[in-house]
Image (cartoon, rainbow, N blue to C red):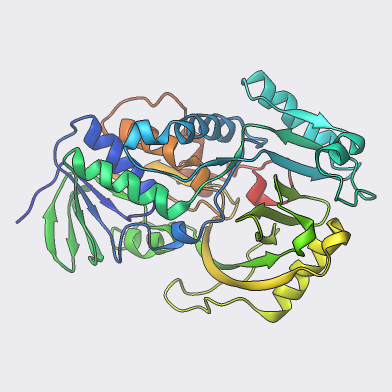
Length: 389
């Protein structure tokens, strides 16, 4: 029977990043088990926005550390994340602006290069916007976007080069425990002996964890993205926008297209992660097109190139579940990222690797423990949209 020092379930960005960090630290035999192929799950369809604007300090610290890693990703992994520094603009109404200003002050205390822009300053940044309903914005010049699939496969390739083993097309069937501790994992490829298992399986995490008698409150929510093509004379969208006034986001994709969607306040549509429509609905396209036209009236006739749907793994407070599981020694979890986990993936690999090895991570992630749901210590950010943290 194969044996590993650490088994990781899930080949998304978090699992691949953690495998890389463990392998880099010579933590013994590291085995990653992925139900399909590395990077092929929701990570591959991540919108990929890299921003630092959070209202909860641990999330800011994770995002800052991840941005540092994205900016030197090739040196770190030998691969690419396709990171583009475009800047990030968070639009707010007059009523929303005080909370944004408070968040910016917190970020600046933590070393983030960010500022508050007036409507006049926003107009200088992009004069094509209609700003009648905007009271101001937070602006981060160092943020941008990256590619989920490229990031994940680069982490995985670097982990392999450092000695990790990856089993693709292999499903985790059961976490094996004995006397309250992990002893291994049963998979479709056969059993594995291990005293440490990390489950980072996105929306499939609740099923895998349930085999060890652990309830993880995660729902799979279908989330849609529209690919818009503004008129030729519009030019390129140069900055990533999250528009709290409308609950809308847009980011550059190419010189002639934009990826856009909505900032939901609750799960859009709870589905099975194995059975949902992966296309985009006509009603959703109409809604997003209307929001785009409101902000960019000169480009209101944007065409629709297409779109797609993926799933978010959503928790009750829209924040991740991270760290060891109290009830089972040697069992760890990293899931429930609720649509904003990709940008945290590089830093989380470091933190989770440290926890698995019995060390204290440089960034304290203890507040994201699974036990918070039973004790009622949910994490609440200052924004109504949970995805904004």
